[in-house]
Length: 135
Image (cartoon, rainbow, N blue to C red):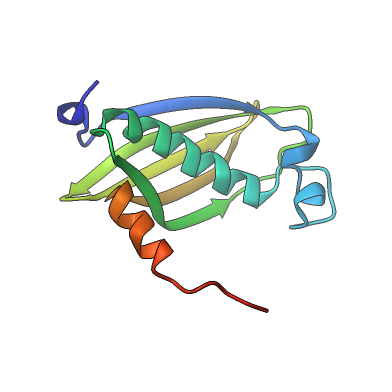
């Protein structure tokens, strides 16, 4: 694959088990053993990154810059969720995605996500230029 394959309309799907590690109770976002919204956030970022990063030149990657999740329905631990991510726009180094999430019964979430293509070395230089933080 290469960068020329990155285009509006590109789609990727993934399936994840809803286990205790992904539950609201474990993640601290709730008290129940259901799919936690933070787990959806991780899955959304992961599917979008995995769609785009293999198409980039060496030394480049993507970082998340925006994420909006609408968690529509509960999914119990033990079920699975299927995500479908689609590239909806590309502006220079900014990629926008729409993501739909279903469990075995219904649509349980929708998300929009934005990733920015970055040069890894330049990004790391910015990080290393910051002084160490002391509490």
